[in-house]
Length: 590
Image (cartoon, rainbow, N blue to C red; front, side, top):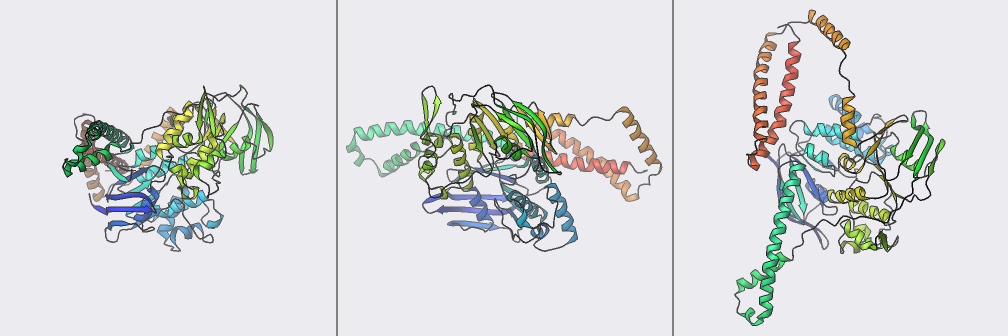
């Protein structure tokens, strides 16, 4: 592994709060690293330090000479007067780069390159910033939440783009499918320490659980030993003076180990006090258009069922958020109406909902809404208990709001929605900026939630776990009701690409035959290339089979599994490239 960047003994604090201490790690060429941590533990700060945008307390950062870093910030900033194209190139105008920029921007649905940056939404600016980073082709990509503000089509394109070739990247993202498909190394920042897992997200989950189990057993052993030592020390206090200094130091070290806090998952939060009547809402032939070219709904009829958990997906600009606002009465339809049941109490988590008094304490924000939630069965959940369930420790609950990270503010906003004890949750992009642990807690809550749920989200993993069917917005008022989750929809959609009919096959053969009559002959160089390709393809096929057999044997070490898991996709990609070139040459007359 050729190192591009090496970090030794890095520490960073904000006042009395230490984010991380004595971190050491390297980033090697070809590594695609996902950085995982709880909100507020310093993920974005670490990226900012590595790119020179922020200082640090102690340690060393050594980079390869002339290392080019491309950095996507969580909230990029541009001059409002520069155009999209100028923002991508800082006023450089090389034709080849401009062509490449247009290709990438088109994939990210940015089509007007002369538009001023000040006219774009925050999400569009983030996509321009992402394009800017990709087209400069740096040695090391550092990406902070690259999938935020991307629709599903863009996310899947970016997945493929980053997975191809030998790109080196370090990124923070909450998208678990994205982590699984793109990354070959996971860094976990936990309790101010860094743990390295040399595999994708699935591998990380397995090995992290093993680490937690081992730590839990270690703490249990230390507790047992500590209790015995403590009992002896209390029973025979005079002996303390005669114990060797070594034994005294060992006792206090054991005490620290025994009191070490391992974060345990909370008991699943279940509400039994949510009642909702049989009538929920009926969309009675609703139409809405902003213009002739921006049709959201067209005579849309839908009768929402009791206990339904609906997901809404579709490309950006197809009207998903507008549909939610129509339902909630924030936007008026052009025709038709929504008939809402009398018992329905909406809880709305919007994309624009982060409006807090920054000088308030976290606990006060929630208690201003209610002191407790009646969970039913005689169980009452206090504001503090709800916050603790969503990973705000008792100490953190007395922090001021202005001290919270962006992700922590999103968590707090979610708690304010739930504290109102709604029976119909409407969540518009709830997963943006939330850490993976919080997402898992929210998923469990929604799975158990006895009311109704509508979720608009681009997080495929989240949608697969939570929803039982989808509304798919295709744009232009075309909306499809699909009875399944997102992965099932993707599988179904792939099957709709119908195989060629016999007539189409016949026409293709005839067309090919006609083309072959006029094909040119191979050059000498192409003949040699054709022969070499046949040998290369045969060797790669053999290597692929050997790798697949080895990986399924169950006899490999962890190091061998990691090495062969990295090599297999490289072999498959090479095989695809060479097979395609072989087919091209085979069309020529040998």
